[in-house]
Structure formats: structure tokens, C-alpha cells
Amino acid sequence: MKRTRFTEEQIIAVLKEAEAGAKTGDLARRHGVSEATIYNWKARYGGLEVSEAKRLRALEDENAKLKRLLAEAMLDNAGLKDLLAKNW
Image 1 (cartoon, helix red, strand yellow):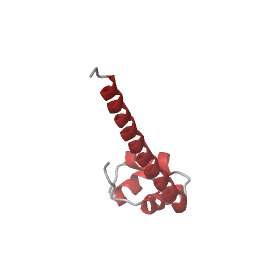
Image 2 (spheres, rainbow, N blue to C red):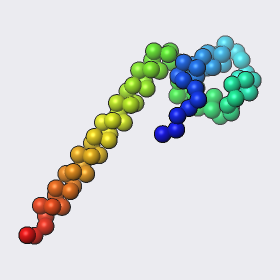
Image 3 (cartoon, one colour):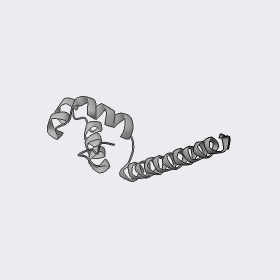
């Protein structure tokens, strides 16, 4: 997964500027991102505080880990089924 140049704290600070009344185009130029990026950040982090964003990141990481564990277990299970299904 691609890592961003901005931390959650920085993204939320940019969004707070936008809520304070700064224009999206000006913010985009000032921070070196596109307007679409700022809109994507609003969709993801809009209304969050820094602590909530950190909690969201932790939950996403945990979810990804659990998905990997499940995929490995299902792969092992499928391998065992194939092995047992063979006629000896």
C-alpha cells in the first residue's frame, strides 16, 4: 500500500483550515496536493479529531491483519482437503 507524505495530524490540520473558510484551490496549492486529494481527505477524515484518526488507522491495520490470517487459514484448509481427497 502506498504511504502518503502527510500524517493524519497534518491532513486534519489542512481540513480544519478548509472548515475555517479557506478555499480548496488555495489550500491545494499551498500544500502541494490536488483539489481532488483534499476532497478525498474530506470524505475519509472529515469531522475526525487526531485521536479518532489514529484509532481508525489502528482498526484498519488490525482488520488487514485478521484478513491475512483468515486467508492463510482458508488456504491451509483447501490444501488439506485436496490432500485428503486424493485416492491413495
